Amino acid sequence: MIEKALELFRQGKIIFIHDSDNRENEVDAVIRADYITPSVITWMRKNAGGLICFVTEDSVGKQLGLDFMSDVLRKIGFDGLVKRPGYGDDPAFSIYVNHVETVTGIRDRDRALTIARLADVIKMIEEGRVADARKVFYGEFYAPGHVPILLGRVGRRFGHTELSLMLSKMANTLPALVIVEMLSDDGGALSKDTALKIANAFNTVLVSGDEIINEAKKRGIINET
Image 1: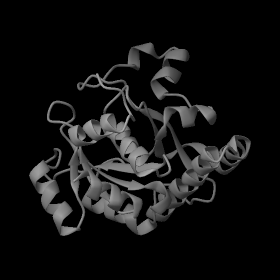
Image 2: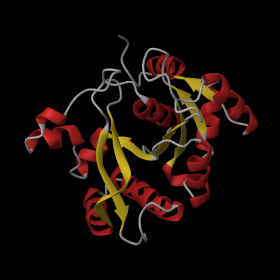
Image 3: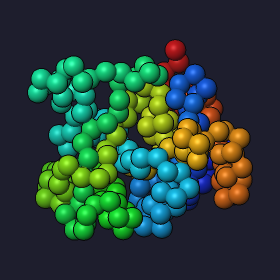
């Protein structure tokens, strides 16, 4: 299943990831950010329904001057608001941004533009053009906006943010992704069984967090523990 997921991932297709029964117990839809389009955002909004987020590695975010929002809040005296969610991990959230050419920021075309340009910024960093990346980031984006940036702690945290980045590393693709939770119409998370049916209907795959973690260990992407 991992090889199929990596093949689809390289092609810029949506895949589904279930983290763990003992964690969030949720399925996220994941796609490379450099393949995002307004129609993909529309699909995510209608068929997933969760928060559409941009993902990159924490080390990449640091080169743009980004920090975790929990750390920012602590620094400005909001320690009392900084708590861990029930599944026990520190949140991956950094800031929310819009591209300056968006209208309101929330429209599908707007979010696609913001995400696609963020992917361009990450590509510049990967190419060693950090100064150019920072110039574009601070010149073309503003905050607060409607696209949350998540910073992954690969090997130190094992949420959807990190699982998607592990797949990216295995696929040798840009560490710039889009993830969104799959929600049900009863107010909860979409079940694995229902998510699998949707995956089959869309000719894609559902992979588990354990599958990804085990493969990442085999490939030396994360350390054995």
